Amino acid sequence: MARQIVMNASGDTHYSFDPTDTEALRKAEERFRALTGAGFTAARRKDGQAQLVRSFDPSADETLFFPRLQGG
Image 1 (cartoon, rainbow, N blue to C red):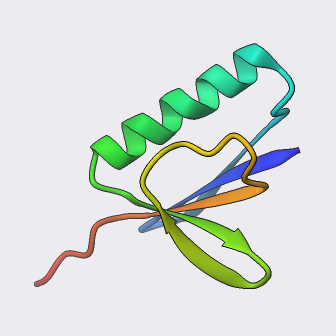
Image 2: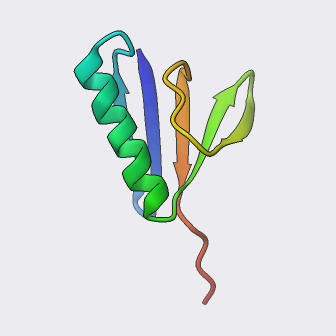
């Protein structure tokens, strides 16, 4: 199972999906595009390191989404 983790002000939300399921993969890519389009930064976590990603990677086991920083 692959996961997309969305960080936000109240914690995080996890979305798990089966990368071999065509419909689940379509929804995951749609979520990726919606979040990055809304200003979230996407990073692939691998071997304890985060690597910035600019496009949907169906082979990623875990993708983290960080909201845009806001000053105040």
